[in-house]
Length: 286
Length: 287
Image (cartoon, rainbow over all chains, first blue to last red; front, side, top):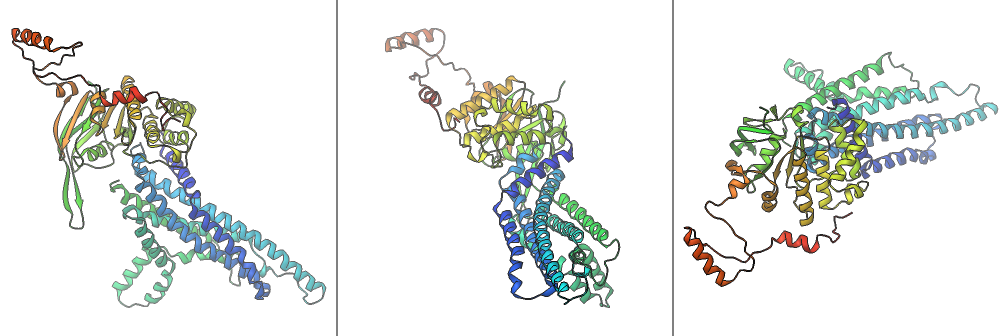
């Protein structure tokens, strides 16, 4: 008899292969790459030394936008293709536990998101490297001309290790979003419903801090308790934005352990949503 | 004494429909057993509860009441499903894989050891007659080939019980005959086969035992030979028949207290005629 981890890996591999063959993934990948490349068209606006910061923000924003769409739509599509084509019926009639099936699906999507984030962040890093080289050359020429006296400031330099850490946090955030989508898919009947509800939850997670700020001054203990519960129920996606502060050296340093804490926070929610999805899917009639 | 391949006891399955939860009873107090190494036909009109019964046997549905065992194991256990191979009705598989990759994938899922997996996959592809098309993408397969690759994935892990849901749906007569031969080969290899089909001639040809359902209830069950036998009637096939012979025959039968009931010209079965006429011609399914 095969082991459950081996089954999970095989399901994940097939899910990943199926996903990369979909036009939707390739379309988003090309769109994301085009968006990063399009940052060069903003040269007509003179950002001066801040140009690198603009390019990084613009590129990471694009990855964030398309990655969120990919996490929701690909997860829903890959899950419902198994249900609607009844390949899930064939698979679950084998000695496969339902949790292995869901874990395999999630791992497959996580691999897909890893490739998506990895490729686009690598492209962004390469572009920033090239742009930084040009900026340093201009600065150096200005120094030779006596227009500036200092070396190219560290505050303007791209921190590529920080960019890599930011990519990891972005990927984790997308994977948590995929787990949320899987939870919704586990009880819903249609792909469209899953996509709409998952995007709605994504918005709640993304904007949670606003609600938290607005309601934190509440006097009613019941309402405060309710807000506290909701703030724990949905992950605060803004916590992952700490990664953006790692790409450049900020005026306020990122606290030690903040990245590890954000990573742990993401993993915790990943486990919770996957467990809930497994519990919900266990009773589903295929 | 070894446990039967399938034991269903007082199985009842209700579905709740709509927001008001209206109860629909798909299977009602069903009990039957399937002995080891038999080919058993599960028959019934649409909506008779065949698919629900099969899904319970496969552990895909939980019974509302009653229980189902496979070789003495609870049917919803992973250990029981290791003993079962399943071909769903109108199977759909990952179109981007080749037939070989698909069967290899399911072999891996079922725990066929890596060492002998490629050999085992080639063996079952050969058994179902798909070797020449094994490296073509499943998306290019005809219906008959899909059924065959479905059969291959169902038996790749050498299960003791094979459940086939409409294995000949949409398949031409030659393909259906080929599938019947595979079913009989599985029986020769010691497997138990549960066959659900609307192609009654095929069921009659390959099955040892029948279980007939209607409206979720057991209508009848038993050995095919017993169920189809007409009491106190015997057929004779006579060559060179003539009206004169008929008179002599009736007189002879009367002397023995028997009676000639009817005389019909002998006919060849349509599928046999089809096989004779086109049996050796290449078909669309032939790779």
